[in-house]
Structure formats: C-alpha cells, structure tokens
Image 1 (cartoon, one colour):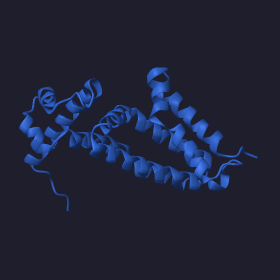
Image 2 (cartoon, one colour; image 1 turned 60 degrees about the vertical axis):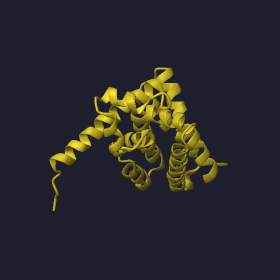
Image 3 (tube, helix red, strand yellow; image 1 turned 180 degrees about the horizontal axis):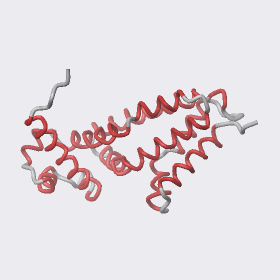
Image 4 (cartoon, helix red, strand yellow; image 1 turned 90 degrees about the horizontal axis):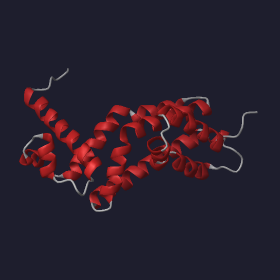
Length: 202
C-alpha cells in the first residue's frame, strides 16, 4: 500500500530542502567554518529556530546535503552493474562514468567536508567512514577484474592505483582548473584505469 505524504510532511521536506540549498551555497562560497546558522537563516529566509529544530546544527545540514546528492546517483546500483559486467574494460568504463557523475555533482560538497573535518570531529569521523566505504567498494571492483590485472599488479596495488586516479583533486585539476569537459575527464579516467590496471589485450 502506498502511503501518501501529508501536507505537513511535504512542507517540512520543502523547508529542509530550502535550508540545505542555501547552506550549500554559503558553505561553498564562505566556507563551512565561516558560515553561521544566522547566515543560513537569512539566505534561506527561514527563522534560525526553525533550522535548529529541523537539523540541530551545521553538521547535520552538511550530512543532509551529501545524502541528498548521493541519493540521486544510485551508487550501489552503478557499482553492482560494473561488478556484474563480464568484460573488465567495459566494467571499468562504467566505473569511470560513476566517478564522473559523482564529481560533477559533489565536488563542492567534498571540498566542504574536507574543510569541515579540520575543525569538527564528527565530520572528520564521517569523512573516515566515507573513505573506508569507498575503498571497500573499489576493492570489490578490483577483485572482480583480478584475473585480468597487469603483470606485477596485485589487488592491493590495484586498489592503490584506483584510489589515486579517482581522487577529487585530480578531477578538480583537470576539469575545474584546466577546463576539461566532463566527457573528456570520463574518457581519460576510463583509459587510465584500463591501461594502469589491466594487462594488454592479446
């Protein structure tokens, strides 16, 4: 049975989305530390007590921003699709597409998290958890193509290479600073993953 959302629930969700959107802009332009709840309230045109009631503080707002973006990416499905692909090169191209979409939609959020982690222990713990989850997902991808790894590359080395190539700093350098298109970045990443991880075709 589908349960319809009530008016109050829809209104509460819309308010949270409005707060999160205003906070994301302020965090990106003024910094996480430099942004106050009062500033978010002004930008969102929502009273500060309402923000505290909805979220409790900046860390919870940042988490909501991140989860809101992740929810649109369907990360688990994308990883599973790559894992299930019988061709290792095609699997790594799927991985490159996922990384491209993640960076396109989240590079500013990643920057915010990294800044916030320097002063907020809870956010720092979040970042460690995220990093651990990413590495486990990447390890699964490398293990899935283990039979095709290049000579001298074992799973541990493959994971290290994978982690390095998909760093947000690499995306930022190539796309944000050097002006590459997202398509060019995706093609480069796919090629780099394939040539660095897999043995050449016979």
